[in-house]
Image 1 (cartoon, one colour):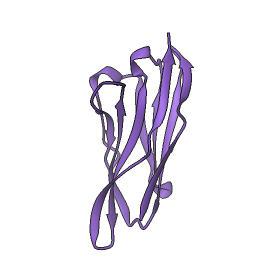
Image 2: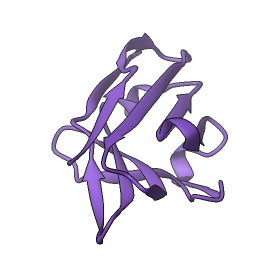
Image 3: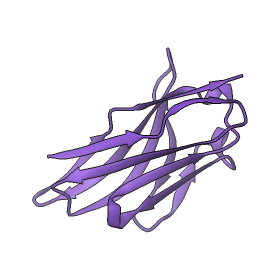
Image 4: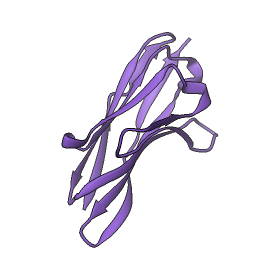
Length: 119
């Protein structure tokens, strides 16, 4: 069993910052790519940022230069530092991880954390 638990969401004014965390626990040998997605009301889930096991990062265009994804492999944790937040960043943010276990590989999802940016 693997669990991903997110934290760090909340309400912030436009221009502010938040830092999301997502910790994986359970039967884990290693973790490949870790991702952050977001889903705003009435919209499809959107990939925001990816970080590979070697630390290579990729960002969705609208967050480039404002968001930074990072990870701590010793803690099986991925972070998303969000600066210069805009109202259009309002969404539920989900983390996703490609988990390597004994005998198989699985994609695991967190429960989501709400980020609300007021104008």
